[in-house]
Length: 145
Image 1 (cartoon, rainbow, N blue to C red):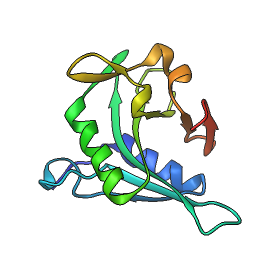
Image 2: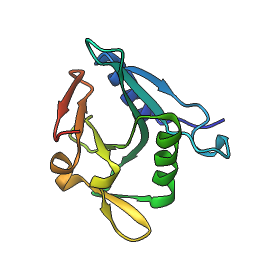
Image 3: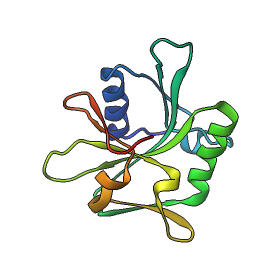
């Protein structure tokens, strides 16, 4: 059985409260040889038959920098090519202030450190495409998608 963090569950719940359809992938992580994202987010585009689709890998950290192996995010990218949609790394910066925001990073916007991609707390608002605020249910566009 794959363990889901409470932060991942909180992100999924917050996306649902913001009006998005969200599905957690119970076989993400080590449960399968085919890597699946942690959750998939979708929302119909008003006035069309299209939908916004995001394939999300979720991480939480108490550190100022998060290093994610390139191979892990490459698998999410491959899933997005096969399934459709855009790939995002979703980071919840855990701190003592009670901040509960989830930052959505497009993979090309992450810093490349060789074997890993790096997300930094200090520049999160500048680097992330979206910020989800669970306490309000708002998704704030930090950058254009």
